[in-house]
Image (cartoon, rainbow, N blue to C red; front, side, top):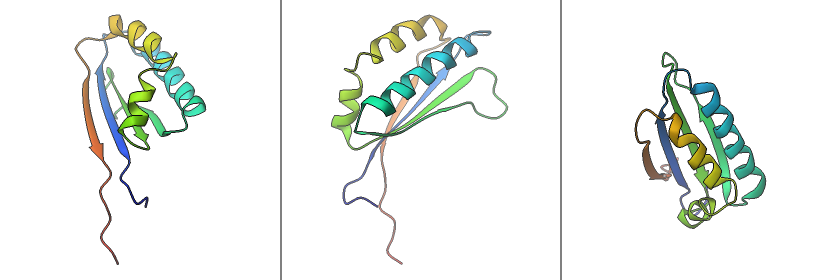
Length: 105
């Protein structure tokens, strides 16, 4: 484990009926661009919970908060945010975490 904790973002999006495929295309593009162009972005998963047809969860891991803040300034971020807004049934629920240290064996 790293000496400093990683910064983790969990963002939950409630999608309007019939709009999940369009949202997933945008989210996958954002994820691909982030992983390819942001050295501080280590993980960017696009998840669809089992049993839910209109919820998409983004799980993102960054080196630190500064790397996440950098993510929000990248050229691919604004188009994702703008194009996905009309597809949402509600405001996204976004939570921030730091990875916890594992106890020594």
